[in-house]
Length: 277
Picture (tube, helix red, strand yellow):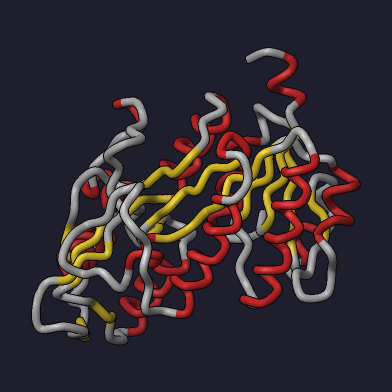
């Protein structure tokens, strides 16, 4: 890697969160990488992390201090504050030699249920969360394309993920675990997501990317196989039916395919989960 790449400044908004922290660990050895945290005190002594309360603080203060070349938005929280923060990010990248990578969601398609969705399908959401992501995506669509990448993901797992922590706790306490028998989706884990985003930064790619397994799986089957991988458990499954028929919530790639070594199936995500000791 060239010294210029090593000197490239990356700012991860939401760097203390599950996805943001996985990205920080992946990128910090290759780029001059910074992150933000809101309340987690374990990041106070890390010189690469800055406190940032999205509701109270203006993101311009951090942007002016770090002057990032690449901003990765994996921030969560108050929806109104997210909209304002991203308006400011759009202003920054429009006026500077900088780029924004926005981690979006398959929920931008959650009003469609009969088919999986591809990069250039029309977005339509029936959920507040999906509508927020669409609004931010639309902001980014108005700036020069080479200054942004929209990275849509479905369900993100990983050993430190909130989803897997909930499953582990439920298994240990013999509590029911919700499954959606009619939901067909694709999945990813934090390591693979971080590697894919690293590649997108390295290659200076832009546009819309769907990051996730290249194959689809029923949510119930995926959770059952994950539990089998975690150990010898007899889980209580609470089946939740949101429709009478199969419904899709899956963001599959078609136009923007990553190299073969960065493509994977859902079984690899299951195998990545460590058994409960």
